[in-house]
Length: 152
Image (cartoon, rainbow, N blue to C red; front, side, top):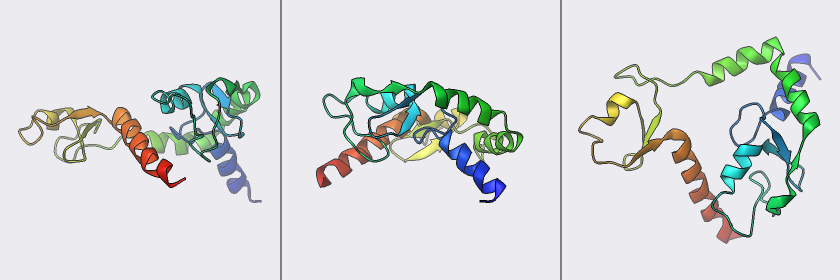
């Protein structure tokens, strides 16, 4: 395996499949997948009895999450790799509004558009439901999951 490929795979293993960032306080599900503790709890926040793994949909009891200390230490090491930091920095660059050159951090539910704070006050979106991108993404993830669940 080429060195660059091995580094890319190591980076992927040290990343949360939900937020796509480096794992923070990693936990492992019964099926063996790893997530940031806060990401998996946010993913499951509105669920009652059935907690599907976001990767494989295996049903996991909520109290079965185990803190993964070794993976936490490995992730800290991966963060220090110079080539990985450059890639991470590029991924974290925020998209800018073409009109106002401000960070797109809001989502318009009616128009399904990303907006900057200045777009928010424009007459085009004045009476629309707007929410932070992270909140909209979580809401739409839940909707998508609800469409998948009946198929099982």
